[in-house]
Length: 486
Image 1 (spheres, rainbow, N blue to C red):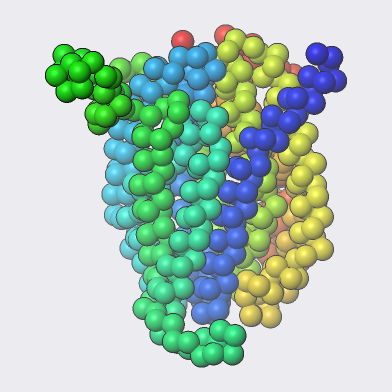
Image 2: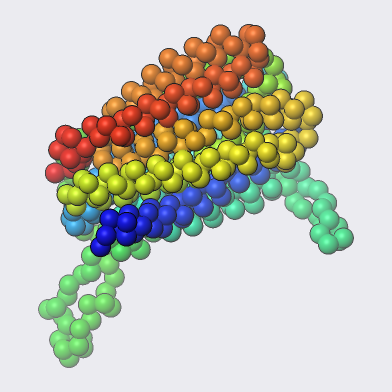
């Protein structure tokens, strides 16, 4: 096969794995749009209440993702090395260890829920709703952790379709649950016919509860998919009853007639040690970066309810642009991880480079669409004219950062598949605190929310350049060819 043909085949593989992940990410953002629109119809205070604690929910969510990634990278590399039995052992450890972590994170979240809005400097009028929203979010963390753990294991085994479909289903469930829980009983018009729609009228609390219920249902289905349906990772083995076979069937095999039983579990510290080595840099990164987001929230909070609401909705609107990059980054993690596990570092490099180029191209297009479509986006998110005007201004600033933002997202995914989590974490920390927070604190008093988003745009460009240098220098492949497992 010629070099050109090989490159074409590799690119097809990147696209093949990216599409389901991208669709799942986009569906998730559409869900956020619908959620934001539902809550936005309740007024600026309701939107600001959720926006106030959003940086803290990102922190807890990021920690859950880090815990899952510590094991899923091992799964990808073991699958690539054709060591499926070991991959299944890693999955068993992942479910046990991350469930314990999810319960601990939930307990911490519940404990701080009543104090958090005060710590973040939220106005008195939004503290109650913000506290209740975060409390329910914290209660759902074990379910969210299991969804991340099972879903990332499936993705790293090469199965993108099942987790993507389940995540899309979760979006639909969230919309359905929210429509009943947020609004009171009301009449709606369907094809000119008035229909009574039942509702609980719980407002912001209903939004949190609807999301929590959707998380719980999806977590159960995701665990079922990986434990019992996955071709490579299912954790059941057939009972062999050859002694009774002749008596039952006169010599006809009945192996398939007996139920499956779990294999014997024996805890092996090496899997946990490897997971900690991979996850701790990511967890530290998420903690410090979300600390930066919290600091950013404190910078925005004194600017007023309109600014807090516009900032929250602009973040939601912008995520529609970077979620395709996130999906491509997920595909890069799988392809690079499996290539490393198969002992083919050059193939891993090629997959990483192609994924980054694809991500940059896609997000350049979505950035342009975001710039042109910003007014339409905000018209769907809120009826408040002041929030719309400010949100459109800051969203258009961010559009210019999307190409390099894509480079950072996809490169981070590729490096993660190679087991390189420490240096990317350091890059993110230095960029976030050294550029964004410093610049935002200087510009916010002078330019308001616009200054905060100028700082954000500049920081994402710096971050993308740093990741590009890391990718092209190839240092991430030098130590043991990037292998995370042995």
